[in-house]
Image (tube, helix red, strand yellow):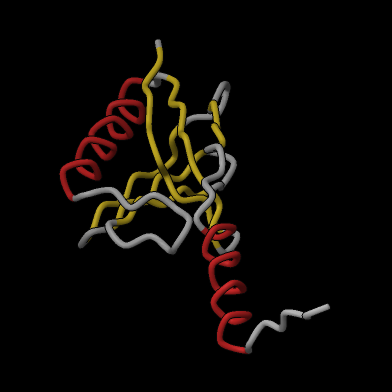
Length: 114
C-alpha cells in the first residue's frame, strides 16, 4: 500500500485557496429605514460622504471603502449626497443600504421615500 503525502507548498496553496474563497463571499447589505428619524447632517468632502441621522448614527460613503464594503465612484457619492440633501430639506424619508466594516456602516445604496 502506497501512501500519499502532501508537501508543505501544496498544503499552503490549498489553505490560501480556502481563505480566498471564504473571503470572497459577499454578504447581504443591511438597510436602515429612517422611519421617524430625520437626516440631521450631510457632509461631503474629498471622495467622502457622511449622512448623520437624528439619532446620531453616521453612515459613510467612500471611494475607497475597506475590503468587504462597497466603494462608490465619485458620481455615485454625488447622487447619494443629493438624495440626502433632498431628504434633509424636504423632510422625506431616506432608506440607506449599508455594509458594516470595522464596525462602521458604509453606504451601498440610498433611496428617498415619500
